[in-house]
Length: 239
Image (cartoon, rainbow, N blue to C red):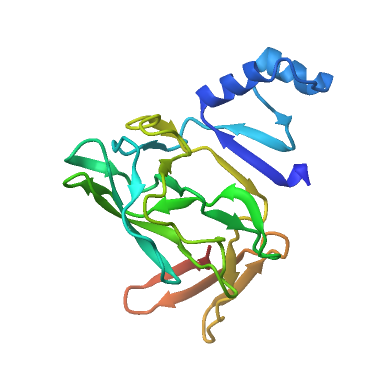
């Protein structure tokens, strides 16, 4: 449901959203918040939260009508060679975090395995330099056209057009953009394990909370060599 989705955006994006949605229907309480406090609040099926700590991403500097150099044929491919990049040599032509699409490569619904009609998106995994108008990028997810892991309806073909963030040629090159985040409340999890309670101690106890899943152990004992009482708190967690 909408109450379970959260969007974390930077201050400029929040201001743009408030201004951009002024002509769209809003219920009075939420509209009042937007007008008086400049906060999005709850809208478009999610709760908006502003954070000035949203990280920024600098998009790679490659430009031109970039194309796939060689047709991909192997299942699980993560490496793609690109050519026809306008500038022969670029440091940081593609940056880790850039999102690329390949012409006529559409994503599949993970359950039905039918095409979504949307170009599949792939994330560049490491900074790549352009050499002699070419670059080899490593992307994820790996590409599969068949089997349980099938996620695209076809592999990138030779001369398929490559776009970054769905922009034409150099539309976004070098731009610094906020990495706003939208997620469900179940997107992240924190788990704790109950630590063993040692015997022979002055005190050994555990506090657990079923709702949050937290579990903390307290152990206290006398140090005969240094004539002092030692107490420690431990938590074993993963996320």
